[in-house]
Length: 110
Picture (cartoon, rainbow, N blue to C red):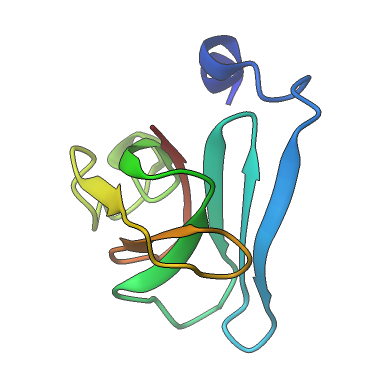
């Protein structure tokens, strides 16, 4: 997290937008400091092709994955994956992209 803050300086950005709070899915996504945060708190459910709202179109990469081996995770998602946000209005934003295999917490950067 500290190296992520050094790279993106999201803590002091003051710019944030919650795009999804879904009680049944136990999933929260929000934007802060140009990053897209996707947090799955469900104890037994992962999600495939879950749509996430984003502020702008483009390609997003994983900046941090709590399921990665370096965090003693299962490394179920390829850290080199890219997610393409297209003009598909979703959750109050003009663009949406699909997050593959949301098992834990991901932070995406463009």
